[in-house]
Length: 181
Image (cartoon, rainbow, N blue to C red; front, side):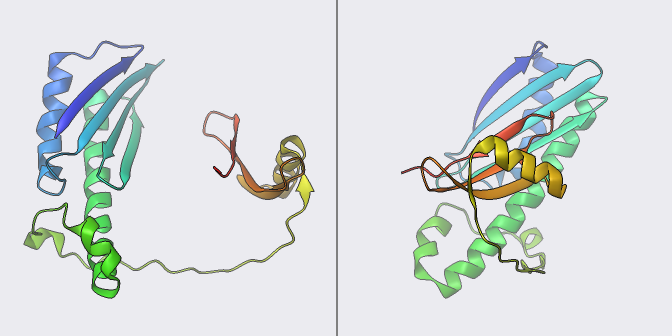
């Protein structure tokens, strides 16, 4: 794996680099050799955040943990990534059995060890909801989302006539998702 380290409001010490690379070796057996890992350390007041993005050949895995201690956040973010990777590989293996188009993606990974054979729960859609998608602008969609008490809202953009999504971000701002043409 290739590593890239950045720090926001903090300097990335050799001890932090050593700790995260040692911990990430644990998932090294689950990740292809050509994967790149981007690690971002940030400090805001008393909150220490570790964000790790693993660029796989056809997918991106990302985990972010905020805590009062940087070293505890590193431990937790690696645990989250390991669970994501095991779940991803198991699902990929199941899909490859049913559909040959997933076999190429599965070839990027080494043979799976015994610890990877966990029975993860399958995705279950608990509820399906249908609704009319009204044409409106982004500000009106945010207002509608707030009135409903949701953290996202799907609407038809009045100017482009495409389906868009507005969502509330962790820091209280809003995001807009538009389809790429």
